[in-house]
Length: 239
Image (cartoon, rainbow, N blue to C red; front, side, top):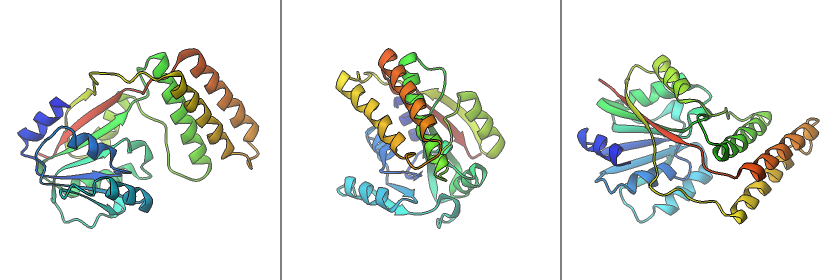
């Protein structure tokens, strides 16, 4: 994140837009860098997520949230120095359209930041995170939601090269100085969450298949532990 802070400083970043912000997790990460942003706006289609985010950042006048569709943003052209998309690339129903809108509202020489967890290379414990995420995504898709599997670094680069006009100028994995060690209690709760995922399929003719797959993932976690999957940052510049 020190490297990202330097990139933001080099581009004299003042105004930031976080697309698909959810409850504002990536904004929290940006704020932790203690960089002097003038304003940060997060948008999401989930009214509940926006309410939670607004409540969490209620004492920060420089941060605000709006319920808005990323494919039909109401912002004027070239409104932001930086536009971010965090762990949402695999959730987009129309990647090309969303990225095009992000480019439209980005100032000349501004930056697009893509932050994504990746599918490989991962340790055995990190594969546990991927298996859970992909299982959840499969269940979401069954219920008509847009939720793809996570990508490799090379796949993300291919998507960005195909769908955006801005130039990919840098990318790197996020390295945390201290990795959280999941306790046995944490792991038991994670294993229990898989049962709740399977319950979403109880009325489905495929319930038995999903139940079997859920048990297999639980057995894998018991044997290999659990760690969060690696995350990467991709920096693109509008030249």
